[in-house]
Each structure stands twice: as structure tokens, then as C-alpha cells.
Image (tube, rainbow over all chains, first blue to last red; front, side, top):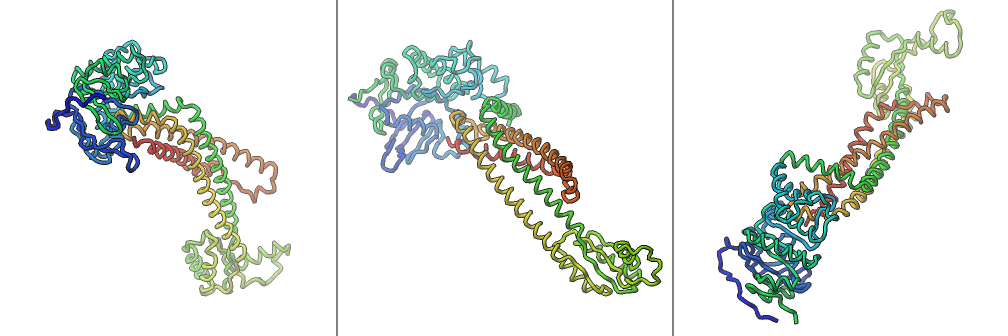
Length: 245
Length: 298
């Protein structure tokens, strides 16, 4: 196992941080923590990989950031918002500041590409004329301008993930959370998606990618946080995938 | 909320109806079946109540008056009786009319040969009740009125009618409650199955920041429209069956036409239409609202 690399500076100003986790623990059943006293700071504009085996706490971490779950203890601050203190009715507005991409794409199957992306804009009550301008623009960014009428089942996995990415980005989120975005894709499509994520990051969006893809993690030379059994075992700048053995 | 968001929610709700054809069909069929039974029972019970009411209206209390009572006193008693809430009509039958009626009923022929009226002390009031259960109260009042020498009443008939009325009331309430609960149960289950299949759709909406209202609105509109369609079909069915039943009874059992005086279909439907539509739309609303709520906590 590689040794822990450069640790993040815990004392940076909160305003520089996109995500702050302070001593966060989460137990689904008493005594079995999915996350155990995790402290993590991610700066605005960073590109971070979170890696680890199944059961290491990666998905729990994403769910806490989305406020799908509440921590058993500790503080979770996302975009300056203490998510633990959020009231139920404040959650939708909070989530609009995040873009989310899942391994299984989670597209609305009965709607075409355009409507899937426009849906995110309708939720924030964007006027129709703005939607008609923004959706083609973001579809062209992800390289799907010519397929706006297609239904998800008519697209390849890579294309579906690009639609999901377009939907996540159309509202210009400050943070993009990607949970195994290449998990269902072949190597070529995986690289296409990662290149898009890098491009998005270069435009200033904080990108957090949970992945198992060793090749991509090792090649991209980004910050890598490795988790094991609910704790962070390594946090490296320009890190690589740490083998279990 | 922006007007285009509202129209979007409504459009999505209506679109879902056509998109999920089998779910729509199952829900409409369930609501229709329940409301059809409701409509039939409502029509039968309303008619029963109408027939009992008719029987009640034919029932009267007779108050025999002292012989030789002045016209002023008769008018005074009549006026007092008319002001009582349980009284619907008061008919004064003079001694002469009583005698003429009696003679006619018994085929006496020409009564002018009688020099005296043998029923001179039989002038009376026939008092019809608006509520037969109030007969004892009226009788005890009449017995206290000066100039009333005897009160004749049909105690057993009144008691029987009151009992039948009460039973119809209880049965109506019971059947309506049972049908309502069964409808809610069946419809919630149907809606629940239909929405559970689309649980993922709700989750996606929630993940990307949709409010509960925005997520729920299309489902609720869908439920209400299904409820509306589901209430029209049984109304049409009950309308035709009701008319057919009336014609069948009139043709097949003409002798019963006096006894089985059906309410006109318009009278029954004046209440049945809003009740059925209200139930259908209400059940559709409650069913979809509560079922979606289960999936909103994402």
C-alpha cells in the first residue's frame, strides 16, 4: 500500500472550500459505521477522485453531500451550506447548486435528449426562451447537438452518460458529483467522459469523481482520496490508485 | 410559481395518462367499478326513502272536535296547528262533510231524506305530518287543546314507518362508508402500484432539485383526471340501468306502479352526479398524493 501523500491544509478559509467534512461519522446500524470520523476539505475548482473498494464508504459520502442522508455525527458543509441544518423544504434549492451524474445514467426514459436536459431547467423555473437557448448550447458542449430528438434507449452508454452530464451542467452548478460515471462504459467512452469532466473542471467547476477505474485515476494525475472501511487512508495530490494488497 | 411551470405540470399529468395506458385503464376500471356500485346503492336507497316518505305523507291524525264549535274557534285551532313544524297540512272536515262522506262510502244513496245529521259531533281535523316520528308529540299536544274531544292516530303504522326510515338511514350510511373504504383501498393500491413502477422517475426529479410540489403535481393531476373519467363511466351506466329498470317495472308490474313510485332519474342524478364526481376526483387526489409522498423522501 502506498503511504499517505500531501495532506490538505485544514486551516484554509471556509470561503475557499467547496466541500468540508469535519469528523463525520455515519452508521446505518448501531456500531457498524459506514463512515468513521472522516475529515475532508475540497477547495473550489479542484478535481478530486475518491477511490476504494465496495463498502469503503464512497457512496455514503456522496449521499451525505447530496443530503440524501444525515451524518450520525460531525459537520458537512457544501458550497458554504451546513447540510445538517438544512430544512426539508430547503433541500431542493440546495441540490440545484450541485450537478450529479450516476453510473446508471438515471435518465427519464420516456423523454428525449432535449427534454431530459430541459427538465433540470424547468425545475428551477427557467423561462422557455432561456431553455431553448441553454439546452442546445450544453448539448453541443457534450457533443450531442445532433441527437436532441433521440430517446435514451436509442443511445449508446457513452451517449447516455453525456446526456446525464449535460443535465447536470445545464444549471451551471458549482460542484459536480460523479458516482462511478464510467462504470458502465467501454474504455473509449470512459475517456470521452473523463475528458469532458476535465474540461468542465477547467472552466471552474469543482469535480468530485467516485470511481473504480484504475487506469483513468493513474493517468489523470489528480488529487486522489482513498477510502477503506469508512475512513480516509490516503489523500494525495497527483495521486494514483492504491492497491489493496 | 411561473405560469409556464404550472402548465408544464398539468401537461405532464395529462401526458402520463396516455403514456401509462395500462395503469390508467386499471385505475379507471377500479374507480368505475366502485362508483358504479355506489351509484346503484344510492339510487335504490333514495327510492326506498322516497317510497317511505310517500307512505308517511298519506298518514294522518284525526282530531275530533266538540259539537257546535264556532267557525272562529275552528280557524284559531287550525292556525295554531299549521304553525307546528311537524305538521305539513291540516284539513278541516265539517260534520256535514263527514256524514256525506260516510254515506257515500256505505252506499246510503240520497241522504236528504235524513232530517238530522247522525254525525253531528264528528267534525274533525285531518292532520298530515311532515315527520311521522313526531306523531306522539302532536297527539299529546292535541289532547291538551280545548275543544278537541278525541284524537285518533295510527300508532303502529307510524312506528313501523319511523323504524323503516331509521333502518334505511343506517343501511345507507353503512353501505356508503363500506363502499368508500373499499374504493379508497382498491384505488390507493392501484395508484400505488402504478406510481411504484415510476419510483425511479420521482427519485431522479428529487436528485436534481425538484421541489415536492413540482414532483407531485403531475401525479396528482393524473390521479384527479383518472378519478374524473372513472366517475363519468358509472354515471352513464347507472343512468341507463335506472331508466331501463323503471320502464321494466312499469311494463311488467303495472299494478305496483302506485306502490313503487320511482323518483325521476333527474332527481336522483341531481345529487348523484356531484357526489360521484367529487368521490372520483377526491379519491384520485388522495390516492396519488399519499402514494407519491412515500417516495418523496430522497
